[in-house]
Length: 440
Image (cartoon, rainbow, N blue to C red; front, side, top):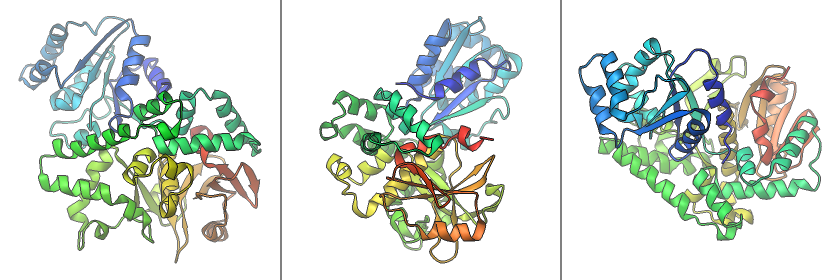
């Protein structure tokens, strides 16, 4: 399956200053597959090692030998000369060796001709809790997410539909009869989400949602639950991680929508759950949306650190946790959860495009779902609606207070521009990307 991160990998390959590359992302989002494909097709000489099985490599870097000796011994141990021209080494499950992670600094400083890519399960968690020094400034990081909706359409050979969506997005023109077709694919995406294996399962059943095997998502969720046990040594922390993860539907459905520790457990304190929540964030199983007190540049300078929302990293997993099946989604029978499912979907798409998740909370009940900063037009508020009904008191309040150049409303409605509001259909959120934000 084609992934947009491939272009970033090619840019890394073509840089003049070589730094080891670390790919971070939630488990089963396709990291190993895309790295393997990139290495096979872009380099003449390629070697992959997996530290879960290549335990002698772990032992080598745990030794007291010099960095140079470890470097040279690694070549002999894996029978691969990664110093040779047009070669690359892929180290998977690198979280198994803190020492090797730390030695990436030596690789960069003394052997900057070498191409190395690293990835691993829960690598973000490991990097946030290292006992050894992290090679700050000596590695390049890339973040990978579940497939966004554009990648989903690519997987279904819908490039012409993608081109039409992008054209209508730029011109604020109606999709016409293609609008319903795009909505149909959007609903399919809500069912499968963006995990590659889940999308593949939907393709294999001819995109017949009613014959889609939900067990693939069940397996992913079970793997996540197992990670919470196997990769956390403290049983008390494991329980807290699970309680947070399972509380998110209730968190998002409460009146304020903000994350509240009391929803997890009566009298729960933030100091008791800060580390478990951080574990979920660093594992990329959840995404944090921070509250902005004042929508001024830079937005991150006006964040209220005590007020935030937490979304699941994949809307398909969210629907599976709610036990929503094909009939529930296709017939719009998600009831009270439809709004937050839609919001979660938008959060996933924005995150995949590298956009910080921020929202504005005003007095009383005024709240704008997301804020983005554009180079040309400044700060733009985004309101998300799950239906075609698009009345929004909060956008009106925000407009009266801060007078943005325009506003964005994301809903089931077709493209358009009216009353200073740019209407964007839910299937077109992927168009809100760096190119759009940086447009002059």
